Image (cartoon, rainbow, N blue to C red; front, top):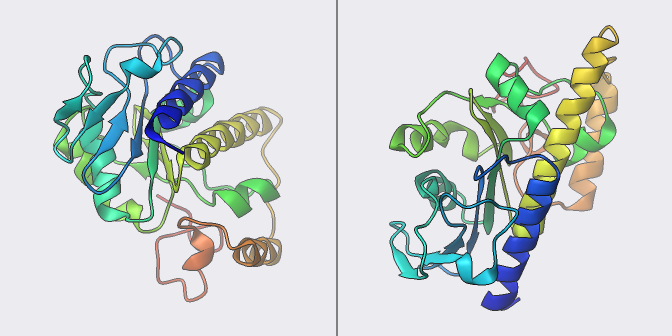
Length: 236
């Protein structure tokens, strides 16, 4: 996919995020890695539902504009921390999906194994400790999660997903919100019935057989040496 096509795809994903109520007003941001020195990112203070390809900024590793007539997202520090720590990542998506953000505000991680798809494709979703938006604190707080997860909640803020390309990262955001909505509704019905440890291990094996990209508790759970996951103690 060439740069123009990537710009168009960013705009399309932005429209989907806006239409699905995952980013009100000018909220949210998207970035895509072009190479080791250049990234595309959404502009600050612009609705993700109304962007055009010419609105997209091209920036360097420091977030400085290389090409474009708009200021880049003020959250690029957070995005760049992901790219610095994860050489396999080609895209980062930040949004405020309502159900997932409600869990982030309540301080409740998404760590209950309630449906096969969420276990296979996403695993647990921990909460990154609070850091003020646009600051280095928020970027630094991500560090301990980046080697083990591809989706996190941001305490009192929203959600962040990343993946090998734009569609992978965006679909994770969709799945994250769907998981949060189901868990919320299940709690209203008296609580979710969780999958057993044996069922979870079979789902982890399915993931390994699929050869899916990214990080996941399935990759670290066998000796329980990594962060807590579905099989181990709950994510705090």
